[in-house]
Length: 384
View 1 (spheres, rainbow, N blue to C red):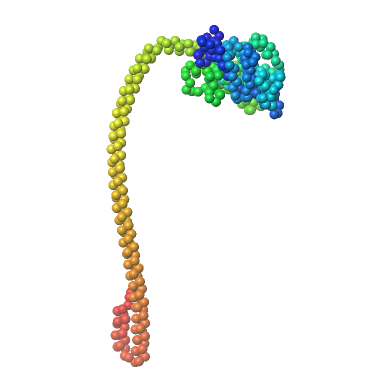
View 2 (cartoon, one colour):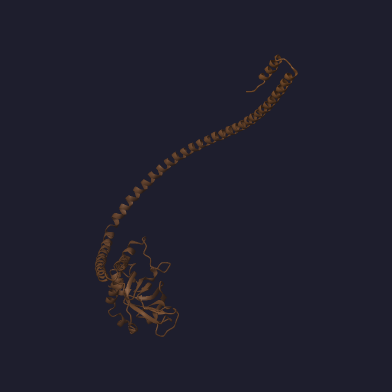
C-alpha cells in the first residue's frame, strides 16, 4: 500500500480508519507582493470537499477534519485589510480578497516520502494561477506529487514566493498549537519524524550558507556563490536520501531484532535488576556506616564548641575584671599626681617664706651663723 513504510505514529492513517484530522501551520511567508496596510492570511481546503476550507493567520494552525489518504490539500496565501473582510472572489467563510500564491499538498506523497510529517519546511508557491484549482479535485491533483516534491526541493532558495510550514495529525500539536520535536520522545516517534527534521535542517543550512555568501561576497561573487550553493544543496540532498534509505532499512532490521531478542533481553534485564538490587543494599549499608561516623563526629564537634564557648566566656570575664582594675589604678594615679602637684606648690611657697626671712635677718644685722641654720632645713625640704 502507499503507506506501508510508515509507522503507527508518523502516518495519518491506521488499520481501523482511512480518515484523519490534519493540521497545517504556516510559520512565515516571504517573497510575496503585498501592499502597505495589508495583512497576510492562509487558507487550507480538501479538494474533495469544497466546503472544508479553513482560514487562519500566520503562526496559527488550520485544521482539515476527516481528510482521506488519496486527497490533496489546497493551501492559499491571501492578502487583505482584515481576516473578516468578505469578498466573492476570496475563499469561503469571508476570508481576505487577493490571492498571493497557492500550493497543492498530496497526502499520499507526504505519507510515503515524509512519514506523514513536515517540520518547519520551506516550499515555493504558485502565483497567477487564478481559480484553476477550483475546477475539480482530480484536475487540481494531476501532477501534484511531482510538483510538491520539486517545490520542497526548491524551498531553500532565497528568491520567489515561499512559505515555511509544518504539517501533522491534529492530535500531535502541543498545548500551544505548535508541533514540537522533543528529545524525550519515543524511539518510534523519533524514527517517524527524523526525515522531516533532516529536510528542515538541510534547507535552513543551505539558506544560511546562501545568506552568508551574499553578505561576504556581494554582487561580484553572486554566480560563484550560487554554484557553491547548488553543489551544497545537491550534496545535502544525496545525504538526505542516503539517510532515508538507512532509516527505512534500520527500522525494519530493528523490528526483526526486537522480536528475536525479547526473551534474551528479559533474562538480561532480570540479571541486571538483581545486580542493581545487590548494589543498592551495599550502598545502603555504606550509607548507614557513614551516617553513624558522621553523627559521632558531629557530637564531638558540638562538645568541643561548648568547651570553647566556656573558655571564651571565662576569658571575657577576666578581661572585664582587668579593665575594672585598670580603671581603678588610673584613678589612683590621677590622685597621686594631684597630691604631688599640691606638695610642689607648698614647697615653693615655703621656699619663698625662707628667702624672705633670710633677707629680713640680713637687714637686721643677724650674724651669718644664723644663715646656715636657716639654709639647712630649706635644703632638706627640696624636691628633686
